[in-house]
Image (cartoon, rainbow, N blue to C red; front, side):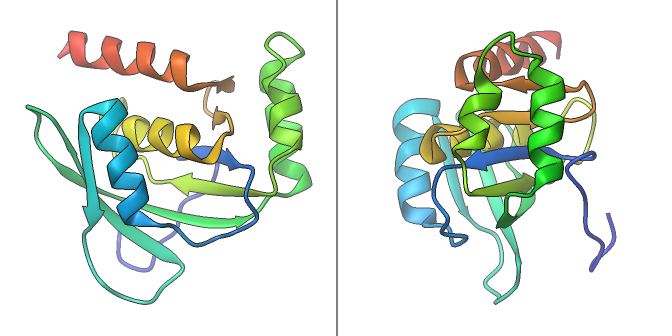
Amino acid sequence: MAAGETWSRESGFLVFAQSADEAIDVEALNAHAVRFFATRIGVAEDRASALVSLVVTPEAEEPGVRRLSSRPRDAGDLALAEAADAGVTGLSLLARRCKSVWLVERAAEPDGLALRLAIVLASVMLGPVLDARGPELFGVKTGRAKLAQITQDR
């Protein structure tokens, strides 16, 4: 993806966040990632922008940089979440309680680093993850299973 180019909820992962705060506490995110996901997360470049570049470093794996941005949740986000959930898991009801969303850049298919960052965010922000390519709405437990499958398939 070229500099200045953005991505959409259809091309990345969309993480619903219960907080309306669109800023990210990277130190707290890293502490949570280290404790529960054997992953370190740090800022890749220090610049004031709507896009944040983070280095994602899973234990015993190659690190990589993924970008993310946040914005208020909109009706389109909810419509996609409801269509993906179709009342099966109830996660679309959780998405309704979320005030903002985080868009996580996906660099490849599959992208284990983007998925890892998305589930760490979901765990901290207390919301589900939407993969609009599926479409699929899932929580941290399912995200971990997907990540294990990606790792196993390598």
